[in-house]
Amino acid sequence: MRHEVQEGPWKSAFRRLIRNRSSLIGLIVLIALILVAVFADQIAPFTFREQNLDATFLMPNAVNFFGTDNFGRDIFSRVVYGTRISLMVGVISVSIALVIGGGLGAIAGYFGGYLDTIVMRFVDVLISIPSILLAISISVTLGGGLRNVMIAVGIGSIPSYARVMRASVLSIKELQFIEAARALGTKKHIILLRHIIPNTLAPVIVQSTLGVAGAILAAAGLGFIGLGIEPPNPEWGAMLNAGRQFIRDYPHMSIYPGIAIMITILSLNLLGDGLRDALDPKMDR
Amino acid sequence: MIRYIVRRVLLLIPVLLGVSFIVFSLIHFTPGDPAMIILGESAPPEALEALRLEMGLNDPFLVQYGRYVFNVVTKLDFGRSYVTRRLVFNEIIGQFPNTVKLAALAVMVAISIGIPAGVIAATHQNKWIDNVTMFFSLLGVSMPIFWQGILLILIFSLSLQWLPSSGFNTWQQMILPSLTLGSGSAAIIARMTRSQMLEVYRQDYVRTARSKGLKERVVVLRHALKNALIPIVTIIGLQFGFLLGGAVLTESIFGIPGLGRLIVNSIRTKDMMIIQGGVLLIALTFSLINLFVDVLYAYLDPRIRSQYK
Image (cartoon, rainbow over all chains, first blue to last red; front, top):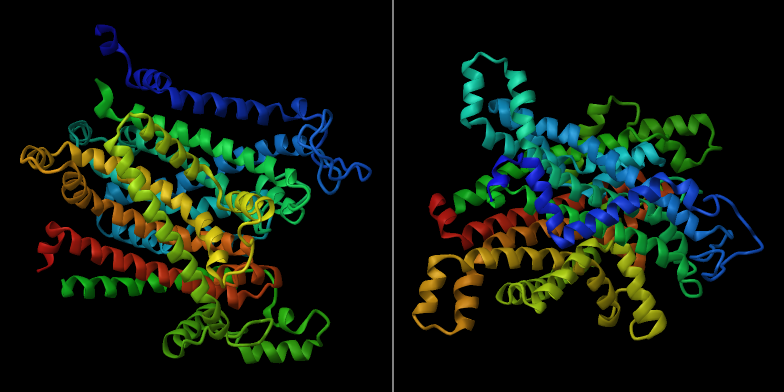
């Protein structure tokens, strides 16, 4: 296997990733979902807000693939547009958590001492509030809306990123190439940004992939208890909640958004698990 | 051991102060005038001002926070509900047992499904039973609580009519909520148990136990599982926090009169004092459970225990 030796670590990790059947399925489904989100305007036969009060509660049929809701809106179109909202919420809230949490964790791990103690005590405090309750409290303060949901979910998941980042910075900072950089007189913040953080990417990527799933779930949970994105925007959790009161007679209103959430989360989890195995340096040979 | 416990309890104090500060600040800076929520928008300005004075709302933020903490610590006084004007403590403590019961039942569901499933998967690694178990556990991790609750209601209450879809008094009423809340954690525990067992299987002492001629059952349960259990206990403790949070959603789905549903309803009525008290009580419970788990952990692991002799 000589050719593998010359391969870069990212390329060989990618090869391991797609050789694993379940993570390949996760990757393909996720790419399909991203395409659905990007081309929602072309895919959805109706807009998400178009009401037709003569055609409410239709069962799934040839025109309305998933049926219609209590306002006669096409559920298929709403689920399609919902993909856009959920993926966006997932990615942006994870980015918020990653920048703040990862930043705090990196600083704590690299500089140590008092800074470390202060940051980690703060993280301990945040972790003592179950994240959905923290997100609920923040949502109550900020009010509804897409942007506030992303902030609430993002802040709710800061602690896990801080911990992951701190742990990997701690393990890297003692390695020889960092010592070499220090011996060359490289400035501290350059060492942290140029040399340490790029090497922490593997665990952070895994954490973020699984984190996007968690963030989508949290946002849907907020939507489900009425704290999420304001109607008529088609957020999956809010759609489930709206369908709940008609569940006895029109279960299709809840079933399709539920399936959409499940498929999205499942694909992210499959991919995340696969990434964890593929990026594990112990698997390198 | 006692020194360790005392140290951990003392460490809890600053954490809880931090939690109360964060929650108090969030609620404090929520738009909306408490006096107006209580008296209504059409109340005369003099009455509003009088109430603000009475509630100390004109004092500086830190003074209000200090007074709140002082009252909570010395008198268990979490303030009064904006809506019912009753003491928050009485309102939340009445709902609390149902939430704890729900979370405890869910933990039991999670443990009694998760650990056996993980052990079976590990002892049959890469066989079909392992694949099936791991597929279901991945599905379990990917199922949102509220979606699963709705599905269970749809199947077992509306279609089959086996179990009631709401309430929390009889055991029949408790089955669906506990399953809904516990199955996600069961899946996580199963995955953790499987990977820990596989790890332990590679250890020399397991090989020794086997070569002594011990029955496979004894090797699996006494030698492997017992050693794999330590990290699993940590995960179970962490799951408890997740479950207390998830109870908020589960209680709303099944109409269970618990703390979570009270918090959700209070969001609608803008009853900030209830939200604040409820979140604090849940965070306190979570911290105490984590403390308990850490102590248990130290007790289970002789390596940690010996450090604190």
